[in-house]
Image (cartoon, rainbow, N blue to C red; front, side):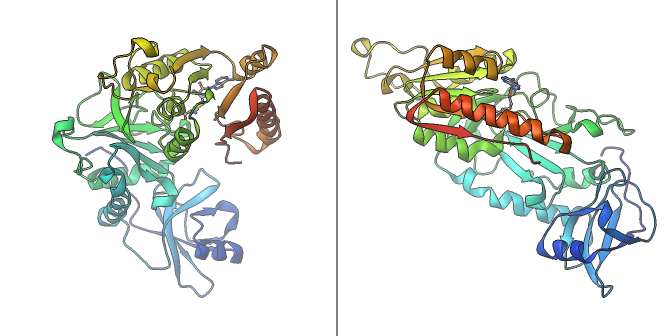
Length: 386
Ligand code: SAH
């Protein structure tokens, strides 16, 4: 057990504006500081706050965060509950059960988001699973006081449904990732530290829809891989056949590998980070045979994991460079693609950055369209919540 703070025995009682009351009733998972009209006493991060309605009836309970405008993150509405290990375990079990179809699927998937923050009743907390490793990412210090309860509730058999022959029988490992605000904390918790199990000494290889990917959950972005794009990657696979595909902001090549399996004739992964494009290259090698032989020299009896080459002699190229510069260059060189994927990092972390972000998105859309064949497909994503 980690030596962490415990929530105060004394719950904070709150009353809120009518608008906030309505929002919470409808299921909004946050209570903003500005919506609090009465508060019993001050508290520390992770203390439990009970919100009462106009008739002084229980409305919701959540985790208190004195240093954030999101003052309470709600974990239970309408029906009172005791928030503790049993409570969190029930929620984790429900989240795990929801993901059962992934584990049952014909095409192996053992990397997925087990807990998707607010959507699974864990506001400000994400748990990703990569094969036998869980990566717990915290976005609010309010979780420190409840972390031991969460860890003790992790499904011990996250590995159920996957046969041990596939190298899945080892006990699980838990790695902690912290958002920037939490990196300095008085509890000795460090970003990337191993909380349970053996320390990692190599990237983890996990499967998604039968494809293999490596992930570095200690140094990688977020928890190491953008598992939340799984369904979009599958969609790209369905649309890529016969196309020359450009994946901009490719990171470790998730969309690229799917496009290749979908029958793209050529895939280019473009990212500013050399470690990312190197990882994209390795992810291709994990899934596809080395450069395909010409059709007349091909040994048809050879079954490769995914014989991408057979679908038209596909190749994978990487470009390490700036997306805006490289796409403008391609436009000048009259390079054209049948599919352009643009999934950039967040451009607006603060409200003051939204205008600049909108400009950047507009620029990217124009550049993407400029290098797209008529009738081609532009896939664009945004992770700027603002
Ligand atoms: N599409 C990826 C996730 C993208 S994360 C996936 O599905 O996995 C954002 C990526 O953009 C990072 O890998 C980062 O290195 C890259 N990046 C940030 N600024 C960039 C720029 N100006 N040009 C190219 N790549 C950039």
